[in-house]
Length: 286
Picture 1 (cartoon, rainbow, N blue to C red):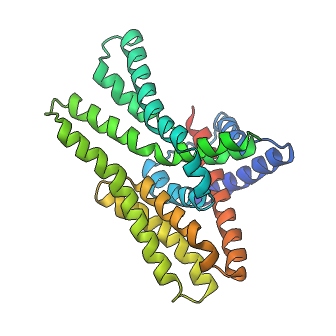
Picture 2: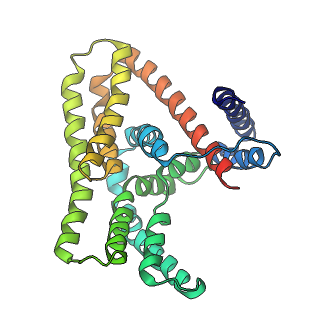
Picture 3: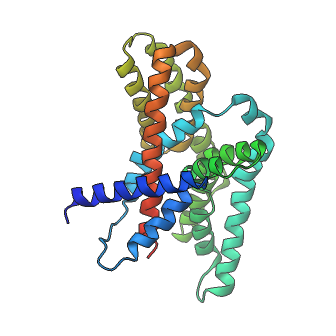
């Protein structure tokens, strides 16, 4: 079976599973993970290796932009205390708990390596939070807090990870250097996204073509992520910031025609990406 045939077969399976889940009023991301696991357990099923770079650089930015675009600034600020306590406090506490469990139950594991593992697995995934919570019928406040937290927890996870790597490698550690690194990852990434978002808002009025207008929003999403990652800031926060700026100025930027086309294209594309991600996650479980 060629790669093209495999892709078409998986796309058909993803559409079928998502359709059944929606008809049963169940969250389709969970159904896709279980469906992917079921496909992977079929004898003779093709083994597919998931490239992390494809997820981070190709699939993640549009999901973040779409989630940020439809995030209410008022609600985000209203629940800011809970959001940032979860994004920084809970991620740190989870990393510490993982480190403790590793030291207690894994022979030869030390605290530094445990913290390294904890930093990798503790930040909740943005794609999962924004996709699954929408289909569970949770209270609006809970959904807003979980989605907001998933959009900003990248910074705390990256900081803990970098600290653990430095300690594990035996390198010198300084609180001043760590503080600067933290500030750059968080505020540098957010600043890059804000600047690019406002630049896009200024340039948007010169496009004057519905197809180009919609396509340019995707360019903003990817460019924000790549630009921040190139200077070792948070690509996630940069993409979220540019998406928030785009959503804030959307009423004055998009006319009715562009709004209808853009929303339809974005909703369809994000659904395709989510279906691909969660089906591939299921295929990786074996």
